[in-house]
Image (cartoon, rainbow over all chains, first blue to last red):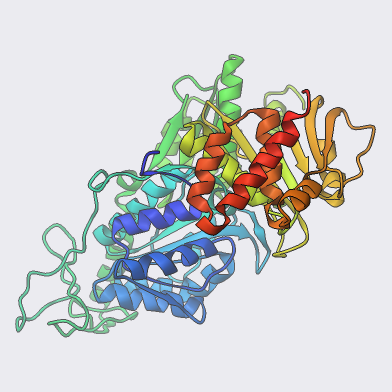
Length: 382
Length: 176
């Protein structure tokens, strides 16, 4: 029996990856279908010298991880739609104050408490626009446990690199199913550690003064430097400012640090795209059904391909336009009313050739559902 | 395959043990999933297991080759989904089967045998798992034993091993 092979739920793959990435502080309020993340970390973190706190609600959970991150920890919380709604205000604070943190949203059917034990992908736009004001955000997803592991580690790395909250949008189907997970050896996946300031004690530290490479070294809050952190527009000392130049520069900085790197941040997988006449675009659990269809139809000589998105925000529209350029039709496969469909339509040259294959009834989309839509598009009937 | 029954009977646990044996011990691919409601006990429970040598993408079962129903409501709900000509296993104490089902239906006194030979209903699911591997030969009994050794507290291991044997014997008595 190999030591590093496990048969686990997607939620456990996320936990393993978070610990691998250096997570040492978790605060959360358990909610289906993310509860296993809290349950497992309540055992794991104390055992490795980390902290686990079950909070009174999701507002407090988000605030706790922000505080803990400022003091120098790698932090995470996990929730589902209802809790993610409550986190939106302080998510904006973390964006504004540039505090690295990872937020897992295991999506279930919404709105409101919706359908807790069934899958959905209805929070794609909430992840982007849930908190107010112009901003940018990083959001990743995954369709299998190995990818959940990799994207979770990536989320921690990106959070540190860009000093930003990173959202992991998993869904009930992948989070609750069990399959093989091979845990990488230590050092196999690169890890990004906190960039700490080299400014010594007794010397002025400017928390928001970028280095030459644009990165902002941090100083553990409560440590040797005193500085201010605020959700207001602020200057390089972290003090509030309504100076037009300061306001303008900060909002451009917060937006551009991610939006100017869209291609660099884009993670995706492609299957049989080289000669594909029909391109399926999908992500998360839905991509599993899409890939099933593609492989099955390829055996019959049909030229189908799949573009599986792993970065959802910033949305990689140039990459999508390129990959779909030669397609007769593009079919977006997702478990909502077309949230990524609209984005793909905006990205491609021929939006009228983009179609939706979806399910919104809590039932996981089957290969037959996708095939039926495909036949209609091909003019073959159902 | 699909295991179905009532919450608390252990159909999900049995499915996990089977799939874990396939992946960890026999190096096959397997995916296990479950559908459930908000209730912790009672209510209909279903767990899907796919075991294959190739990579599994779509993780659910649409037409099981092998279906287990441990309660009448589970049987009534799920017998229509069995693949025509498939195997449908029920417990003779809890389920009254229909004649019209296009499947080889096997009714076995699993619960009765467990109560008679072990006396603890908690290992009913492991007995069912014994019958399952005996009928389908999808994994070796030793592989299940290995997973049981890893997952089950020492004090309960012997009882589970015995339940597995009871199931294997029940299944071995049949000609498939």
